[in-house]
Amino acid sequence: MTAAGREPALRVKGLTKVFADKSGPKTVLHNIDLDVASGETVVIIGASGSGKTTLLRCINYLERPTSGTVYLDGRVIGRIYRRSGKWKDASERVLAKQRRGISFVFQRFNLFPHLTPLDNVAIGLNKVSGLAKRIARERAAEHLRKVFLGDHLHKRPSELSGGQQQRVAIARAIALEPTIILFDEPTSALDPELVREVLDVIRMLAASGMTSVIVTHELSFALQVAQRVVFMDEGTIIEQGPPWDLFAAAREARTRRFLEHFNLPDVRAGS
Amino acid sequence: MTIDWGIVEMAIPLLARGTLVTLEISFVAGVLACILGFTLGLCALGHLRVLRWAVAAYVDFIRGTPLLIQIFLVFFALPVIGIRLDETWAGIVALAANTSGYIAETVRGGVGSIERGQTEAARSIGMTHPQILAYILLPQALRPIVPPLTNELISMTKNSSLLSVISVYELTRAGQAIISVHFVPFEIYLLLAIYYYGLIKTLSWLSRWVESRMPRL
Image (cartoon, rainbow over all chains, first blue to last red; front, side):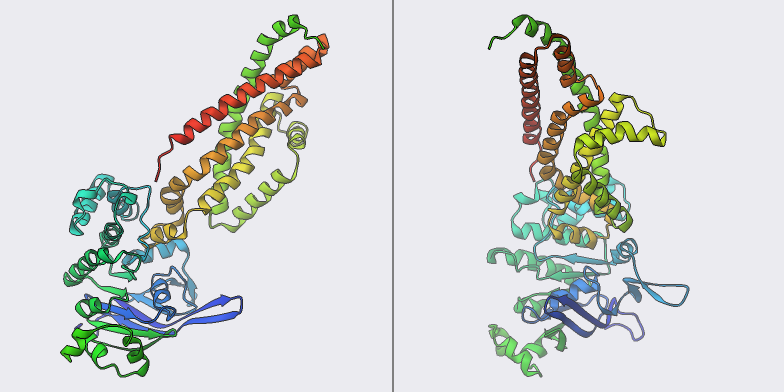
């Protein structure tokens, strides 16, 4: 879908993450390669502990990868090239700048509880993008209306439902107009009846051309929204492909075994 | 045991003056201690290792030595390196230095108690570490910080009685002056206890009022 030779929005190359554990080093990600084209929605699935969340966290350097490189729009994240010809780990200050192109939506929303929904979204525009407070708030209000929260601008986050809080978090993520948004199980902490409103918003954003990587257990959602589904197990990408192909006819036994845990009648009926 | 009421009557206004001085000293020392304590606490949370170590060493020293010795150090040792302070200012500096160490720990603990997700969310929208401290963590930490902070300030007010040893004319010293002339230790120390009790109770009541007005999250 991208023209040949064009840089992908996100490129992950040879990413490995080793956690130092009491019982010794534990490799959570093995040599991961992943490209995400501009406008593409990639869904990552896999059992818990397979490294999906760690991968997302490494992509925007909430965790520093042990080795490997993350490119955003062709530019390296997390390291800077020294005149001496060597790469050096970026300082937090440099990282903060490099990270502006990546937004993250957390499982537990992580809204700032001391700020209204409006200011949760506006604070990044004001303090990071440098917009005047009044303009940042106007812009924030627009984004909140986009996720259907125009009536809740001035409440406390604690007065909102989980679904509403997650939609504020999504507005906060899109407000900075990032190159890519990473969603880490955005509906796992929600009551079942609130899942839909959040997925609807993500679906709408995906349809409007947002580039995103979504870790989720909602396979039927993946089916509707993803151009590509990636299956991970034990820190490696086992296989990937268009959702229909992967769900209906996975090549790898491990993928099939994982998919057996889910009810996907529409897939089997369709295949 | 009989109480010499004549002395009591004479002492009451004198001690009231001493109370005023205690309040003034505690107020100035408290303001300085807060400024210094918050600064130190934020340094302890910063990314500069040298600063973190310096603050840790300072807090360790303050907590590991008696306030009385710290007062003597400020009063007698600072002139040796050319800093001359009169006894009131020496007392204020000693109290502020001492209390700031405890406040620094309170600030560090309060900010540290804010869950990690807050920092991560702020980092994910591109905030730098100082911005995260100033706009995200500190505002949320104020609520857990304020009760221990007011406790520190109240104990500092109590501890200001130690300044009597360097002749600061605060409440305790005012009482001792009367004792040295009239030799009525029982009446005066009893009065001092009552004055301090009244003062501290008032301050605790005030601080609880402040705490109750803190915004809830």
